[in-house]
Length: 460
Image (tube, rainbow, N blue to C red; front, side, top):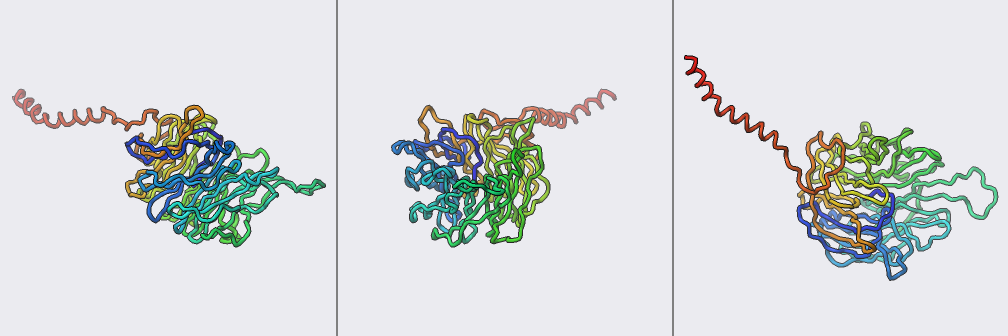
């Protein structure tokens, strides 16, 4: 799962299971959040979770290091914090996936950064949180350019790691013919033993900028989507494709193209029940600020129907995430509202998996919080586990776990036509007007025989 964010912020990190209880536990008291510096994976065998994030090591010159913590199915923390990779300069942009009893955490790493930038590293853990081997480098293009924005999925046999690679001009000077500096989307398979049998491969090779990949697996087939810029200064588009190994002759799928409207930060979610993918992206709306668009894609990657605006999502979306809730057989899309260094509370909508209609709208947090992601609750209660950021006081930043309020704001397929979430995290109160009308009708029905009888007597 990838959480889509843009700007950096110092924040309190909170993990919450949608409920009506307010107890919290501190996971980490020294956290500095950077774009993409966190992720959450679900253990499908026992229902537990692993949260991974980039934490600030004040004792090592405030360098960023990769940390993790396990959660039981209820969302409570278990065990102690795990340090996956300590004290390396600017370890950020974390992603994590689960497969066959192992968690695989990948991140953007600055340990070998030079003038060409960072690389992608990873490390594995077993389902109990025990580290398996050392961290290792996944990106393999060396000094040809920086690597960033990694994501990871498990396809049933191997992990697939995808990232954006910046192609820089060849070093050494001299005349370069027809070289265009641009970003490509690359991928590499990693076995459960942590080995890489083949070199990385490219999803894109055109002279355009391809950014922010997201990947999800359906029936052993990973689909990768990304933000694509056809030319300098041109608005972003959303494209995707399978790996060259799976579909060597396939071209990329256009999920959202056209000029004039900015499309960015795509996210893909797999729906195993309907055998389809959900592709989402943020788009600019000149009237309401940024909004979210969604489109379904078949198991073959081809889009289904037209893109549609997600109803109920407030204008001015800052960060967003999505997950498939297998309990309810619905998509759960959450977001926060904010601009740059500010953020509002987090809301979510449940979408019909067939037509993407909004079924209900809920509020997950109140106050200045930032979205971190949602997954379905494996206990079968349909309550989403939400991980989010909360602004800290001064320089003190904490990672907190606990159950927080989830307020139902509206329901029904036609609900949520826009507007912001209610700032008060309380259940919406039904209007008394329908009740009064119903009561009046009941009174009229009860007394109508008496009225009719009295009228008959007076006429005689």
